[in-house]
Length: 137
Image (cartoon, rainbow, N blue to C red):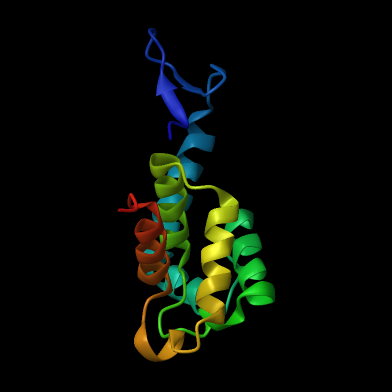
């Protein structure tokens, strides 16, 4: 994702081509560096549900799971924000539909041995989705 670029005259501009103030740019760089330093800690806190995600789509996804497939979130390794982003990418690559993912999450929730035989919600979901995508013989 490109936030800034240097135009043909060597001037730093935003996505719309508007020149960016150097003081503003240095503040953004300092804030980004600070957030990168805190990123591993923040990811851990988000995955544990201690603080909200900065991604509203991920928050909505986890709220849906809490409401309709709560056993999935009780797995040893519930879905993380990074895994959610990977899942979104796989959805585009493999052509999976949202209803298909919701259906698999509901199936996982209904499986009695889910928390006994599987640790990772992400790996289990992907495995089940890929199994359904295989051609039937």
